[in-house]
Image 1: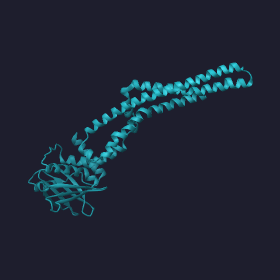
Image 2 (image 1 turned 30 degrees about the vertical axis):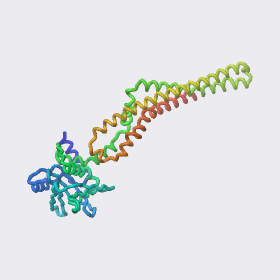
Image 3 (image 1 turned 180 degrees about the vertical axis):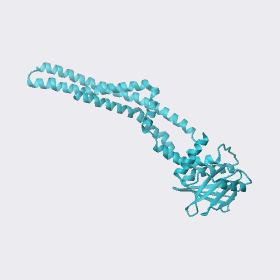
Length: 331
């Protein structure tokens, strides 16, 4: 499964980028030969030079050494090795389109290296930065995956993210959100029932008013209906209109109360699932997201979602019922 995923990543790199899908074997052998056959644990590409022009530099991390391999126009490689014991701190300077990573040694000494790279290489370089920082702190991290797999995953992460944003089935997302109502069928049925009652009651005034005009006012004006009979029927219809108004207000109160409670329950489930999902995300996800954006999603964005689930869907159904009812009354 991992090999299949790695092949897919390699295909994505080949199709959508103009950079190597992995470190060339001869480059890898040359670096490991400099390290007395110590294996490469991670590698990435630094694709900007000091003039911010595109270039090709391999940055490889081993157990005790960091190698920077520069490739000139003729394809010749020069290797510069930096012992990790010499690195005392890292300074990352992110920009809109590129990032600069400075490796510092003893205080007062010039930087050991300045590595510049575009946003495409940021994830792979962050992996190297993460390991170096932990080595500086004296912590060792077990690495289960091969460097080729880690490199291809890092480079294709932005490509996969862009593909996912385009390939989303919006209708499937709506049905997924509506599924949050499933555990509360009873409350939903109660709220829908009050909504249907509200719709029917809202249609009665138009019918009663039409009946009052056609069967009481006009016959009274033409003299075919006596004053006492007209007043008796008119007061009955007026009482029915008042009763209709009271039932309408009560139905509206029941609907708002039941759907508000339902909305809070849906919000609780939505936020719980969101929190549990966030606990399983990688550190790379949190390093690539702004804290304010995550807080906004958990708070205000989730509020908008449960308002849509609890009220938006119901309002659409209510509008359809009202439209059908008005059409029936007019016909």
